[in-house]
Length: 567
Image 1 (cartoon, rainbow, N blue to C red):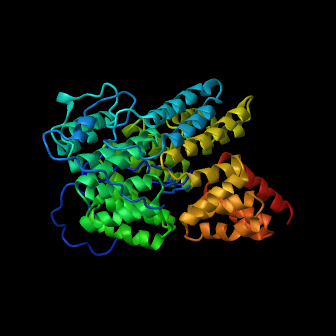
Image 2: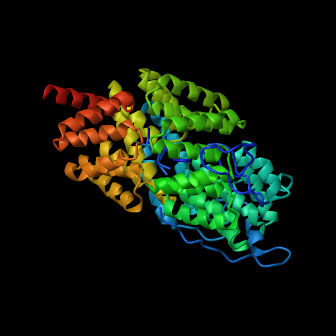
Image 3: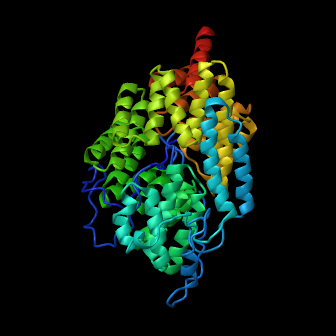
């Protein structure tokens, strides 16, 4: 399964119900002082990721300076408010201000993305349509129109919320994210100096990008946060939002910087505490991540913190504690989005350990809470494939990629086509791999660092040298187990196995139990003449999770048979 991030984690900052700390983080923090309420964000749906934060089987680097815009002048109606009140079709609701990135870059990505999508054939014309819909969104951002960017027909007047706080308690947490965004846009046209309103709008855009697979929303979110910071310099809500945005763009150094700044303003900010854990995990600073998880657990226990606490434990090889924390989180979850997210995390944990029956049960519970929750559908497909139900897995993944053509499910579907080997399957598989590259181009145009996705996909299904360039670039930014594994595999696939071996060993040094990592290590050990080590690594991979990948598991078995025959 691809690296796990918290790209699909329930957003913090809303009431997740009363919760007690895990009890594993030491003495409790001092009594919590009164604090301003954080702007609520939509429930539901970043990573990968198991993650790409990187749960890998996860995905989730360098901060960007806050770009402030001129504060609207005082008066009965500011120029910014007038601009924000002008709805124009095909524009973005990012608030007043110039485009954050050149339109030429986005248009080039759009053309590349569209061309790759249109290579899809047969039943995958629906995938092409979905991808083009995403690309058209990026195109609308690129060619822009009104500066406020409200969608054509966006509701105004009576639909406008009376205040951002009311929106936080209503529209954005009610499940209809698009309606919540429209209501916030309407509110900000009439109240353009609402600091919290702009921060809430930025968070809503981040959530839209995650749920719709549309990275063009990230520049819109950035401008909304900038507006909030221009109106209220150093406000914690926008700083915490910028941390979440940076993490969603896989800019983990930036996420850490913004989270720390937010926590200076409010040490109990759940969103900032969560983003800080994510950033430290993805930067490979695991001891600090464990300390950050303990701190967050003592200050703001709840689903967002519990799931991150569990993942930190899993990365250190403590699967039992990770499972216990997730089970307690699930017992205390009530909102459907929280149930879906935590049950999916439990399913991914079980799948990683080769317990497919338990994994399928958890994914079923997640889908009972939210039948459209894509990470649960993807997890179910992987468990179906590992259990021998290839047809069911292909059908489920086809549903996923039509709605959210992200690299992880695209590669998984392509490999299932290859493993099936029916007429036309080789072409279908190639189409999925081409779309991974196209999606990466569109993501980069939205400010997302996609080098880890590129490295993992290209090493097996593309250009090994391109994979190596991407893996080296990612390694220069962060030194996590997932980047170590990606670099090791790209080096091996490029014929540099001796150079790869130390990285493969580093990827498995924390105790994290990942069959794909063990497979990669075993193949590299075999290539470098360490046959005994290779047998142990490949055997461990297949004993841990024999269905970790339809093609990878087959390769591991074949290599192990050859090693045994050569003894």
